[in-house]
Length: 231
Ligand SMILES: Nc1ncnc2c1ncn2[C@@H]1O[C@H](COP(=O)(O)OP(=O)(O)OP(=O)(O)O)[C@@H](O)[C@H]1O
Ligand SMILES: [Mg+2]
Image (cartoon, rainbow, N blue to C red):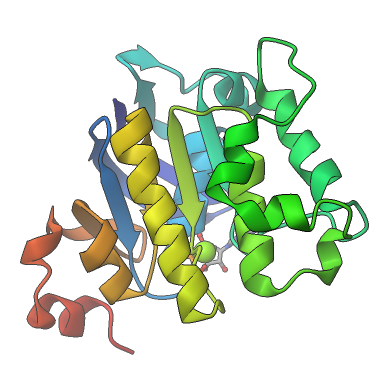
């Protein structure tokens, strides 16, 4: 479905990604793990086109999209829920969701009702300012905003960061529903191992811009975690 092949990327003279290859099959949850600063967010930004790799390619459904600008990648079905959520604090919840409509190609101007089915809190709080929501509610809003465009591939950058356990579970359940009911494909940047084991299918661990381990999540052993992830 989504394939990264030999991606390298530098900020100025500093190489951040070094020959990264990752396969993301349709309707699976692929987790990208690694300590702080290893290049996970940079990789997500390369996938959605906010940065352009100096080497390698990004392929979606067999089509090389490496040269396609971010806006067109969004329209072809990639949606990123950015690290730190990046909701607009002064816009209402409903207005934040409406921002997501711009990724649609059908000109629709209303929020699909299923967003509210997935996250009922967004309906209840529709008139509130985004900045007044709790961290967990903001994360649900950020995911809802990405889903408004009806993406085929949903990329989430550390969605559990700083969020209370009950909302983490609710987010995990939504991901499972999206995968089983809509055949959504998910790329999940995550450092929370239990969440990966519960909701992920495959994992890749990065270190200093390279993939250093990968496998199916049941193979994610204590030893691997200790070697590559413990601080
Ligand atoms: N705009 C930028 N300009 C220069 N260097 C950057 C920029 N953004 C990130 N970096 C550097 O690139 C490296 C990788 O950063 P990145 O944010 O991709 O890591 P990460 O794995 O997502 O970390 P975290 O777990 O803390 O989110 C870091 O050393 C960071 O300082
Ligand atoms: Mg990051």
